[in-house]
Length: 192
Image (cartoon, rainbow, N blue to C red; front, side, top):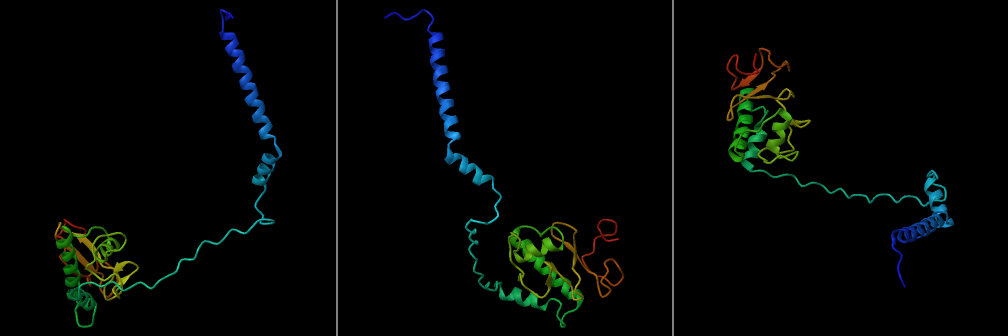
């Protein structure tokens, strides 16, 4: 049998017939009652009538958290902070000792504001370190506070020295009753 000289028309005709068969089959499948029911079920608003209730997520059991243990010497030092046996100036020296301890252990002082420095010292919020107890009476709202319940103010003077300021009894920063350790040199720091 001889093939015609232009087989392209036959091939195109055959492809067109195959395409029409596929389209017909898809049209038949999409208009089937099973598909229509599934589409209608999906379109209906979820009123909860005739539906099984969504199971509640499993309850997580809360376990008591074991207290975090730090070096007893550091714990004792932390417990002296803001105690009646120390002066406000000694409180600042205690805070400085914890900052220096952190700096020696981790290659530099913690940076940031009070909350960042407190998180670094306590090892909270994904910070490395834990030289200060994370649950302590001198931490409120994630910040180290002075004996008048005011957050300490920190300002780095250098990579190894930090200005530490307590607002004092009037609870206002940068007033004459502030207690300051390592004040920034006049005109070079944040201290007015």
